Image (cartoon, rainbow, N blue to C red):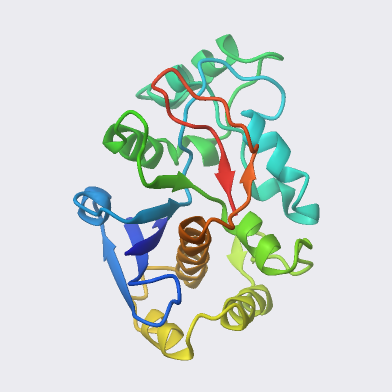
Length: 237
C-alpha cells in the first residue's frame, strides 16, 4: 500500500493506492492523523515538515532553501520551518520570541506559519525514531517533477483563493502521469469542507509516494541531515 496525505483546516485527507500502478485506489479523511498513519505499514508521503531543527539560518532548513530553487515563481509556497522549541510554544508571542532566539539572522514567524504548528506537532508526536516509511514531500515540488522538471506557470491560489485554471492544470498533469479518471471522480465526491486544492495536493503526495516505492523519487538534499530525534530533513518529489 502507498498513500499521500495533505492537511486541510479541520483534519487530513489521504489518497491510497494498492500498488504503484495506481489502478486500485481509495480516498480517506479524518480529523486525526493517527487514523490515517497508525497501523499503516506502506509508504506515506505527507505535505508537512518532518525533522525540526534546533536552530535555523536564512531560509529555514537546508531542504526548505534548496527546494525553492526548483519552483520558479512558486517559491513562496515553501515556508521556512522554525526551530523545534518555537513550534512547541503554546501562544504566538512566545513562539515568536523563541524563533528570534533560535535563528540567525534573528526573525519572528508569521501568523500563517504559526497556525500550522498544531499539525506539525501532531505529526512529530507520531513519528518514531527513524520515521520508517513516512516521508516529507511538497506538492509544488512534486508537480515540478510531474512537469518534466520545469516550474509551473499557473499558481494554485491567487490572493489566498483557489485558482481554477491552476488546479485544472495540476489535475491534468496527474492524469497524464497515470492517475485514472475514475480516481478524480471519487476525489470530487469528498465533502465540500475539504478544499479542492487539498484534494489535488493529496493526490500529488500519493504520486510521490509511488515514486518513492519505485525508487525514482528526487530527494532534496540527497544526503539529508537529521534533527535531534534522528528524523531526516529532506523533501521528496
